[in-house]
Amino acid sequence: MIEKFPVDSRIWIFQNNRKFTFDEEKIIKSELSVFMNSWNAHGNNLTAGFEIKHNLFIIVAANENKEKASGCSIDSLVNQIKKIENLLDLRLLDRSLVSYFLTNNKEEIFVSTFFDFKKKIKSNQIVSNTFIFNNTVATLGDYLTNWIQPIQNSWAKIYF
Image (cartoon, rainbow, N blue to C red; front, side):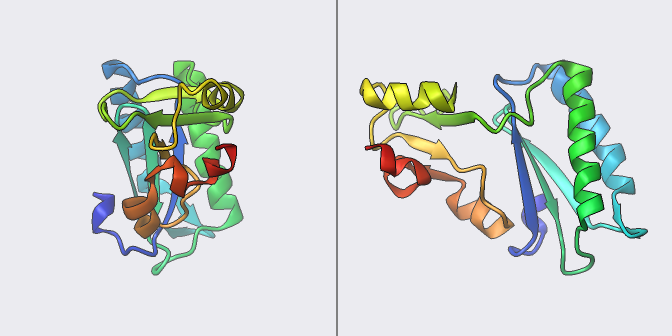
């Protein structure tokens, strides 16, 4: 659904430290669907949507061409994510997590803490042609083109 939004739509990416179970994903979808229907900025409804990717990431998009997300509306999104985190015992707001996959196995996504990620680079368990998920992308266009990238093109290239 969010792929139909304009490419300059704002996005937020939340990742967990492990894949969601079927039941967790069902609850996440239910909770976020209710939230999206009432998400607003200064009383004006936001045109927003979400998707779950790889049973690990929640991607939220807001079409700011119609209404800009305000600080308060972003806070309410984060509070909703905290609610889901607490309800399901997840780690969706842990910014120390790094996700990646090896080029020969795009199906198996690994999640490490930033500290462990750097250790794996030093020990050559992670190499420069490993692909990394860049959860700092801010627009839908960046998400669609730059979310997954080789480490040598990412913020992590400084560790090689």
